[in-house]
Amino acid sequence: MKLTNLLEKEALSLSFEVFPPKTDMNFDSVRHATEEIAALRPAFMSVTYGAGGGTSRYTLEIAKNIKERYGVPTLAHLTCVSSTKETVRQKIGEIKTAGIQNVMALRGDIPAELQNADRGTWAYTHAIELVRELKESGADLCIGGACYPEVHPESANQKEDIRYLKEKVDAGCDFLTTQMFFDNNLFYNFLYKIREAGITVPVMPGIMPITNGNQVERAIKLSGSLMPQRFKALVDKFGTTPAAMKQAGIAYATDQIIDLFANGIRNVHVYSMNKPDVAAAILHNLSDILG
Ligand code: FAD
Image 1 (cartoon, rainbow, N blue to C red):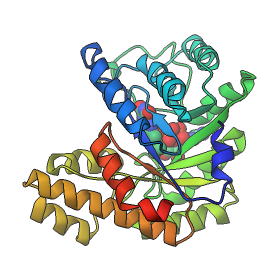
Image 2 (cartoon, rainbow, N blue to C red; image 1 turned 135 degrees about the vertical axis):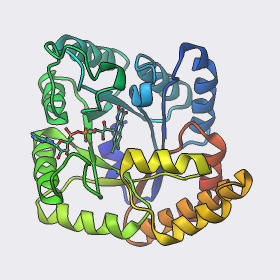
Image 3 (cartoon, rainbow, N blue to C red; image 1 turned 90 degrees about the vertical axis):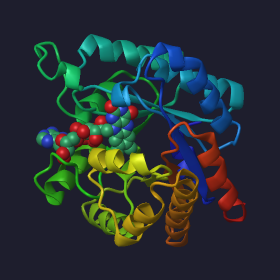
Image 4 (cartoon, protein in one colour; image 1 turned 120 degrees about the vertical axis):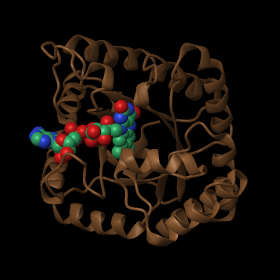
């Protein structure tokens, strides 16, 4: 199923993100975790591509497995930044062959080990070029793009970031998913501004349940997200007590999702990080709300 069909429905929905294994040895445990999440029947699942040094060749394998064994629609991520045209075209061919209908078109970040590499054959600078490549491939795909309520760290300011976002959407994005945020007001503010700028596609907020004190610093560093005082207090109090932090992090994320639903947002994407227990707990907390 194309996600555009899901996103136009009135019903409230929750979707989950998983990531491929970082090494070949972890493949079975990651596949098992993704299957446990799929068995919870989320609206769809996204599978990241090479994020954090993961083995990108498994993205499609995991996405295909979830779709075929559990009937859960999948969204396969694809990045372009250190790729050649040939690699990207080959990947698009593989996506078509795998029967995947939804692709998240991302630029990606240059991995540390390639910082000093010869960039002569790299063909892409921004995600918009990948969106165009996907469109030109003739594949019948629903295309997503990333957006940043707290501004992408490389952008000079929000106005410029939104101007480039509009260009990316106009090139062919059918929907957007946001970077994580911990203060919903930042998202509402962003949504208002992008609607004002003429971006009309559905925007899915991305919510990251922080369930481990050690996760906080890395998550904030990666996303540049602000930590509201309420969230800081929670981490200070429970960050060193794993079970308590997990419960508090799930409650905080649940609270954010309820507020988003209450304010008219229908589809929320959860960065569930290959954690079936966290995904299940959030679904349980929202069981009557999701119906
Ligand atoms: P772009 O849209 O290219 O934007 C990057 C920056 O360039 C922004 O500052 C933008 O304003 C600017 N820009 C855009 N177009 C132009 C232009 N024409 N000229 C000048 N400046 C321009 N990373 C992974 O490696 N794998 C994943 O699976 C993954 N999934 C993600 C999912 C989501 C929902 C999000 C929010 C991020 C994800 N990322 C992933 C991280 C992402 O790759 C990084 O944030 C990356 O730095 C930017 O990617 P982008 O697609 O937003 O890039």
